[in-house]
Image (cartoon, rainbow, N blue to C red):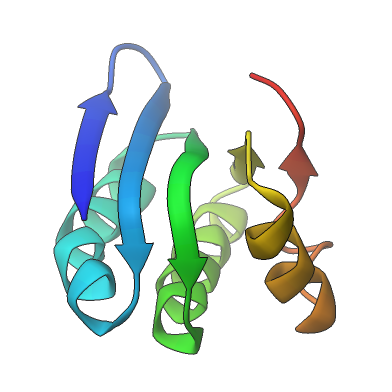
Length: 102
């Protein structure tokens, strides 16, 4: 999993590329936790994510909850249909809103 971060201002933009499986989730855990504690909002570009497992969902949900507690928000953009289907099937579209473009 490759993670790119643009954290200028109160909103950080995070780009993810690769599989959000156990190894991928491990790679995003610290950056997401740090950013969700420091920023007002996160925009996560999922264009390069080809697979998402429950552990990956867990880290996204944790970041969304941390932001929401402080009045912030998390938004996913550019997710491919497979990722959208997993998030929708898990019933997480309210917590992890998905936009088709940034």
